[in-house]
Amino acid sequence: MKSCELYIAQPEGHDFSTLVEMPTVCLVALSKLPTGPAALEMVKSCMSAGAVSFASIGEHADAIEDQIDAALEGGELGWLEIVTTSHQGESVEDVVNFLVHGIDPKAGNSRLLIILDANFPDGKSLLEEARRACAVSS
Image (cartoon, rainbow, N blue to C red; front, side, top):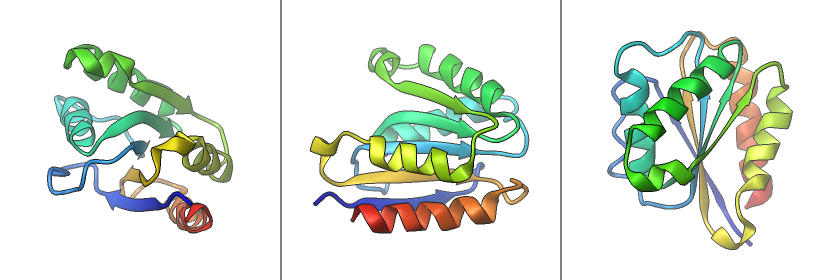
């Protein structure tokens, strides 16, 4: 049975180079839009961890997805194959379940990497649901 590793990070100053590379779904949950080069730096860090897709959730999800898309389009050639989704207005439970169970079942071990700021309105329920979903998939 595949396992789901859960990793939570702040939106600034993340360095995922020490993480073992494995199929990783990056869920971005921010209360405000990244500014300057922050989106590009976030994408680069997630790619180093093995990102296979990016998702955004919350009030700014659509705009954050656009920033992620722009960073991917300006990155390395292989980055153009990365899938992005926006889940603005969707429930935390639905989004987390979609992401955890949508990872390729042949992938074996996988990671849900959540980039979460302290002011994200549904942060507590997002973390609870992510812990539950990853525990069930293990």
